[in-house]
Amino acid sequence: MSIDVIQESGPVVDRVSPEQAAFYRENGYLKFGRIFTREEMAALKEHVDAMIAALPPGKRPEAMDRPHFEDPWLFRYLTHPRVLDVIEAFIGPDIVLWSSHFIAKPGGDGRAVPWHTDGAYWGQALEPMEVITLWLAVDESTTENGCMRVIPGSHKNRSDSLRNYEAVDHDQNVFGQELRPEFIDESKAVNLELAPGECHFHDAWTAHNSAPNLSGKRRCGYTMRYMPAHVRYHPGTLGEHHIYLLRGQDRADGHNVYTPVPGNR
Image (cartoon, rainbow, N blue to C red):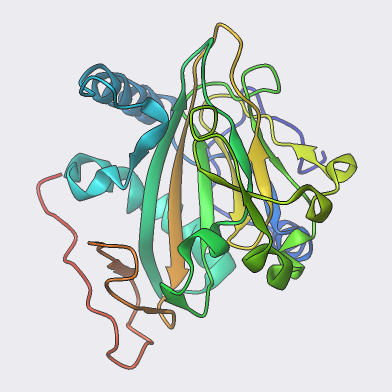
């Protein structure tokens, strides 16, 4: 079976094969199966539904950035042993939680995510810029409702993705900057369609975007972002931010200050 096939009723997976790890290193992304059980995903969806219903007037559901800072319940997913076992296959045994973000595109008027790399947006915050993102499908994610798209191998062109941005209409896009068109070959774009509960991974330097959601179905994904513990975080570059050592040891020579993982979650 191809590693790109959606597993509509696939089992929970907590291991990464050598072939999958090699594909990720070469292409900068990987479609994966289910890490969480259906019961765990149902609980997460119920929780997210309540979060969206409680948003203040004017706050878009695409903009629920770093929700775990205020909601310790989410750490049961961010720190789940199955997640960390999979992440370890990519970055090693010393794992730091860098960030997380719900991007929920409501049906009918969900905003686009412009072409970008995460590494360029995070700027000088991390040294070196080594982050892997687990993108977890809370809802079905398809071309119809604006699934994520990637340019395979684009993580090898990080210098292009650092400097070559232009402004886009923030009323139509989740972010206000986009990689200039001459640096994106859309003929190579891969649509990463997922069933609920499935996930994919991408490198901090992989160029990706997603179309607006003009369908009648919401598209919600949870980005869970991790980095190896030798990466140094420079406080103040992104405002108030917290990082958490989840597994293994600090490898940044004492440079990083880690926030304790909350208990009773």
